[in-house]
Length: 242
Image (cartoon, rainbow, N blue to C red; front, top):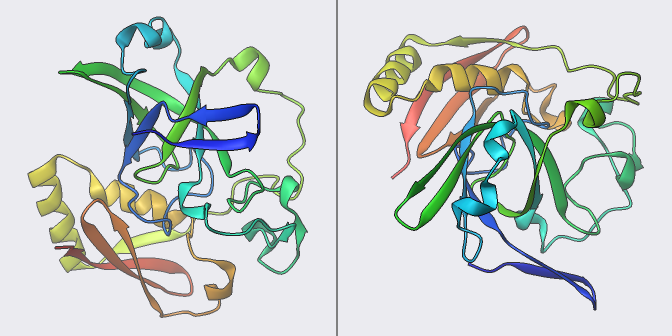
């Protein structure tokens, strides 16, 4: 698969790989990488980059930078000002002071934990942990994360000074049984993954005052139905998507 964007007559970027992720829709994806540690994904390199020698030495690093395309936003117009969730959706700021997806050039950047690098037949894969990447995301570059230069001790956080307060998450008896059955079949700790996602409150700001409303988001082939209550979120049930 080839994916290219021309930003200037002299510059064209090619896809080097495609993300396979538990996040099969935008709703539910954490707003930043590293917030949901249970989330795993794989980066499949595509020809002519699907060679292990392109990754030689990468396994010496614990984390990597992933540069990617917000491919589901390509048909949307960019916005000069947006309402970031950390300001409650009430105030607007300039697009370049946020990490919003609707950008003039739809390029994203995520720091993720590096997992196993392996080959199956002619396919080369990289395991990623704690990512915020949608299934099918085109990747345009990989770089090692360097703690001594990429982490700045005295950096200011602007209007997002610390992570949002986490919400309490509970499971109904039905959802508890369904999560255990799913884990037995797939070896995926889906209850932990759901808890980490919901604790971040994935709702857009305009839904925050609608208590008792039932919501849904999709992981792999499962639709998670849950309800927002005043002091906690409850997972109601898991529905298999046919």
